[in-house]
Amino acid sequence: MSDYTGKYVVGFVLPVDASRLDDYRGISEQMARLWKEHGALEYVECIADDVQPGKLMSFPQSVMLKRGEVVWFSYIVYKSRRHRDRVMAKVMSDPRLAEMMHGKAMPFDGKRMFWGGFKVMVRA
Figure (cartoon, rainbow, N blue to C red):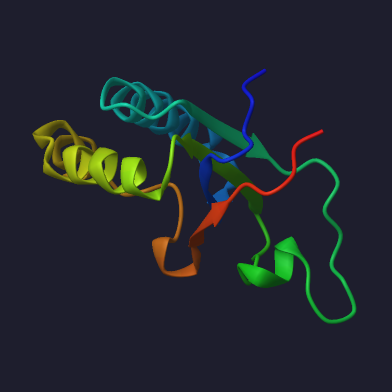
């Protein structure tokens, strides 16, 4: 396990069509290779296993989960925010990214995906 203290993590949450899990997993595996090739330290994709709707907010509510969808929580680890910026610039300009997204009906609704960058403060 990596020592994340001082690292930078980008986390993202999205709804995935349950009938297209194999498609999403295939895209995720390609993305993982791309991000790692361009310098990401770690790339992790997780499918929801125990996420119940809350009274005010929850993972399902945060992505307006619809019947037939599942929540995915994922994260990518970088050395720093600056390192993230360099890796992202390389990934976004890599023609393979456009090829992966071109002409395919995505197995998730990108409009309901959310993400953010975080400085790691504590690791136990």
